Length: 106
Image (cartoon, rainbow, N blue to C red; front, side):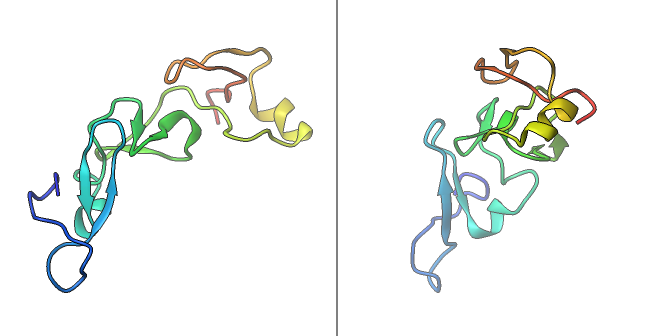
């Protein structure tokens, strides 16, 4: 495990159990570290274990809340679009995809 430096295995009784490995930075998290605010985030700046911060809900970056651009991962209902999303598509400041981003208050 990258967080606690413990050897991980798939056998529950022997050592800490492997929960995830980031496909980009290769950070490995065991069951104990995966739920930690400080040790549960990988080294990537724009994602956590391959999940982009801009498509996640209330995301935490090493204990700090992510405050950058956010956009829906899936299309929203038309009534929700008018209320929560900006009027025009633009490149997301996190991933670079051209999307309708959420307004700052959301």
